[in-house]
Length: 600
Image (cartoon, rainbow, N blue to C red; front, side, top):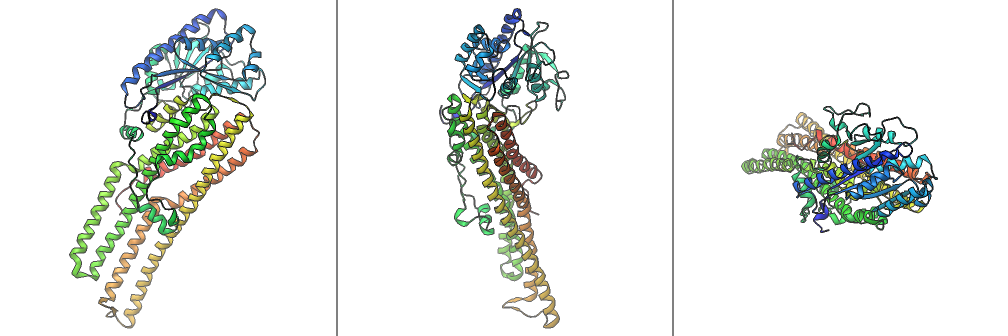
């Protein structure tokens, strides 16, 4: 895979399968069920092959690929897996127990059939936390299959659940999280139906199996695949160029924001960086997330190759646009203060009034050009979009090692998800199921990786909280000094005017001119400092980073005290994702209401 093509996701669609086992699934229905599944898979592959040529600038040139994830239990799982392989799909196996334990749940003939499918699977995940026949093992495997799937194929008789983690429970959960379900009737009473909240005119918050809209699966499938896999039609060209441009030119020096941090003491001068870090630096800083899993088959290759590169590029772009946006508003307020200084200097240097007015006009024009340029490029929106995507990809590198692709966890997918969510999902589909046995050694590796990420992020937020608090405190104090200077100048003028008169001055400058200059300049500079504080949101950022660091540190302690179990690690990884993405959401809320504008 070339360096440029590694940033173009491959067009991949992922099916999951859930369904009944004998005796609930009667044998005389097997051939019909298998043929209906095969028809769905062939139609899906055809739809993917028609979709890919319509977006050559977005998808890689690799052939479009449909995959099935299955627990390969006797009955529906095996029938769908055989249909998938015969239809040209790839198969991934998610087993509730290691194969040698799982075999004891089968008869000899049935196990030979399942074992043959396991041999053909391109990746195999096996849980080890559960004993033979434990329903919890089947439930967890079903949850993994659900999390790995764009579309769930459900071979179901329409009746209520008869056990933990059964077909009905999995279908209900899929519908509730807005995941499309293709119902293959296990009784033969109806043709395959699509159950999906995306069919509703007004999408319900939490749809149910009984209330969700239905459609003919064969007729609806091409449009469904288009909705799930096609890139969004709006406002995506800049994003695509950013991601696939082989020449990354975002390395110019940016001065205003780093200078402000240095002048306020928020950063040591020796640690100021006037040039944004490149993608290689972001990759190096995050390599420890991916490297421990390098030997886990295709998953490990993807994780340490294209996915890590994609994260590195988008993280570097997010840092670049953040630096440009922050420098833009710092420059604006600094130049606004300079414009006031130039205007007031005419009181002290009347002979240079024309030159000062010309300089003031130039500064004002620079402020306008800076504001319009920043808004035209849309620095703040690009920053937040890319920061959101970077965090999604960072979390994916962690959660995917536990079998969680988060295809339906963030947005419900029934509306235009935007380029960032689309790109994260496309990358997750391509990454797929990890090839691993979730034994103690593997879970220890996953836990240690999670703990290391939490420690790194907690340290970052602790440092950021201190830096932002320090910058806010210094800017606040400096503003207070400006107002104090204004008060002192007013008092000095009143005292001197009442005692020795206003004729005195300093050199060629009279007292009236000096006091007028200072009492106008100091409040203007204080207002500029206040504008920087409010636009930069220093106080709230410091508080937010402090809270996030505290939550991360508590989570780290909890993980280290937990028994080493898969379900606990999954729950902790969900909590970590919530904490990290909440920070990005807060930035969105802040800057949606405070776009860059002319200071005034």
